[in-house]
Length: 437
View (tube, rainbow, N blue to C red):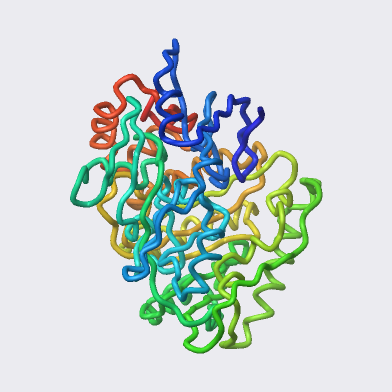
């Protein structure tokens, strides 16, 4: 069947296998093939080809809740459980996942494989920093239990390892205590990129911090932004309510997305908030997952799909590098509706985890031929400033650029060869960036 990620590029024909449990996984892995190659796939929310291969192991049926520890605020569940389902169970108890990505529809296995981050990395790290333990099915079919004390090297390779060490079967997650579904939000306008980063630093104590950035403005307004700060409300109810919004029924014509329409949209959005600080309260669902309320919003970029481009620059070079990159994007007129700036805290011990201390910027680009040379230019700027790219968003990164950004790739590859000597686990992405193939 045809498969693709959330960016709808690239598309592949793949054999999809849906194991029911560890026993069926073992049976699948025991079958001798002339060229074995699998990659695990959860909800298909990674943007490029990190979960694409000729054979895909779906976690669709690994979706059970296994154990709930009331005293420790912990849940053990299958890798195929979506974060949305976890929140339905945990929020009424006053439990909240410590780290959430931009959509609640990713699976636990996918969140671990990409070591996803949220709006609070500067304070709480990434998703895997709150994973207590995981069960991993190796290429041999053996189930290995991993945590920070037992099989720790495998744990730190699997967290952020993009599914290349084995199949995540289940995981035990920690939660934090909350007393309301509401998030108190402060919105602060920033006149340019430098001002925005100053505001982020001044509000470093805020639990959640994320800025929308106008990447088409120039001159003294280059990178003008709206910074959104958030804190869990103390007062309120613990009732989960589903939001039902519109759905995009078909792919919009690609020509509707151009410099003029995006400039108008960005200017209107900034002008709505530029008058000063705004304080409001909103449901956690709207604060953390604003786009989840729009079904199939990826169709807005046209039938050819789009590329999401996310990178991080270390703190000492972040402002200078970000300014050059935003200037180049603005000059090219290829900006996006969704440009998001966040601050990261220190990197963790996971070999291929994306975050490092500094700033990360996410940009969306409609797929067209002219965009690829521009992205190559941006790659060079990222690497020259000591940064790297997020593999869960990537669809075209070169092997050289990947290896320049991830200093632990050789250590990861050596461990992978021990765990998977015949190359059972590989994706189109891992082949492209030189980790497999």
